Amino acid sequence: MLRSGAIGRINFGLGFRSSTLEFDSTIAIYLQEAQRDLERGKTLPRFLLIQDFQTTVPAGQLSMPYPDGFARESDETRLRITSAGGVGLTKPVFLERRYFIDAIQAFRDTTRTEAPKVYVARPNHIRFPNATDKEYVITMDFYKQDAVLSVDIENKWLAFAPDWLIGEAGWRIAMDMERPNAVQKFDALRKAGRAAIFGEDVAFELAAAPLQMGANS
Image (tube, rainbow, N blue to C red; front, side, top):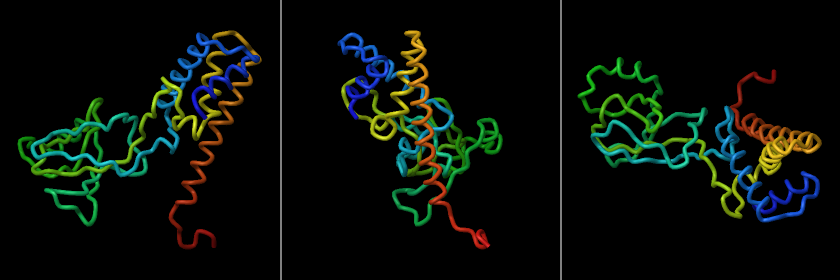
């Protein structure tokens, strides 16, 4: 679904409003606002997950930047070294995430260069206690903020969770316009859309879970 389709659906839910350029632009702003807030949510949908993203960290570095659009690390895995000194590793080396004070106290000699063992998630970058002794490729899985609906495109929200986003944006507009019936309709739509997405995510996680001996005995 394109943004124009989402705008039309919200117009319909508000009581068959006639489409005007000015009001359509207002709805587009609400769609962007709703997406922005949903991407700050405690639980993010799997369709925003980026896997096996790689960053090259040169020798002598204490930090690495977050990828563009970074929202949050994946809970399923951690940062890992997949190449050291230009040589790919046969088995990744997983790094331990720690709080800043714990990491610094655990590695008191911060003048020493070495391979990253732990990391700290800072507001604007990922920090290592010690500078790197050689070039490393760090691989990570993370949730990425999707393309903003500033133009008439279909982004991941409209492709995979249109009811959730449309319901959220429509609910906000209906609240501001003080239209109780529309508020109820959009509230039901956003809740149903959210439940459907996370229901699919739970089913995926259960299907991908490792088998356990005797689990069904």
